[in-house]
Length: 470
Image (tube, rainbow, N blue to C red; front, side):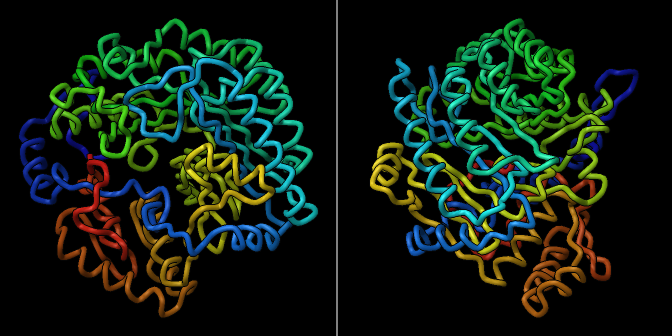
């Protein structure tokens, strides 16, 4: 994070002279008018293509190294309500029937996974996402977990996380996930202000959220994460600061602070949000800086561009030791060599590349019911792609690239990254530094991290419709 806002006597004090100077420089660098990827993968999903699919998925799965555990992602594409701000692949349902039918299809896919994966494979990470995984009943949770652990048992040091919607959750569901091994929960909050909640179609009281956190802790779940969003409709600094204070009262182990991505051309439900209600780019920046300063003042470590964690949390430890990684769930300390996605729209990441299942739930179901994988498109990583992927990930996680290490690992394939480093050092003076074989983003330049990362992206198109850089 940058240094525009300082902390004094537990109050936020804004250095306005520094603010104006830095805002002018950041404006000239494009922070407030550029749209760039979030870089949870490289290349990003729009560059996946149908030439990579089912045969590749089978071969890459069959040839996994069993000496190293894998991650498994289970996508539940259903919600009892559709939040208008959300751009995830999900659909609203009014009964449990389509959810139960979907679980049966998932069970078939899990059986296919078990029949194909090499014997002895272990599960290092398991993540249930959506949609709303808590739409599942305890019986469906038990059935799914029995199949997953039969296909791939947990490694000794596993992590099992679940995305929790407090409005679609209760003690029985939490108990079902907890007895199956859930040891991390991620709760979506976004903002606690009623007007903001009404504008995004997500009513959720602080009291309900607090009770859900209490239930998780009663059931022995040791780690709780909370997701917040800035840049929402009718959200001002006062609303955001109040939400930060309420979130802090819940004592989360981690906080993710995402900027709202207004992409109504991709997520049609966002058309329900009046654009005139959205804060401007400079207001969004002030919100991000303010929340970051508040979390840092509370004793949390700043992780990457938008995460915070208690100093003893594994994510904070990973950031301090250079072990922080980035994948489709954001920042992580997941060191597994592969992430296998099951369910509609899920993306798998193998050492050889990416593969995504059919995004449409109906097409996914048809593929699995026919006895075939639902792998619809992907991307095979060449050496030139791998070195850029590693460089961008290092920049997003550590704000620095060790060019000598890249050369040692990738040889001459690292030369274009070195050339890009020289070019970007000239493009963003005062924000980045190239010293010897180390390229780094200075603290003043960290708001520009995604823009600078895009400078290493061989696929990046200047006018592609990504989300705002801030």
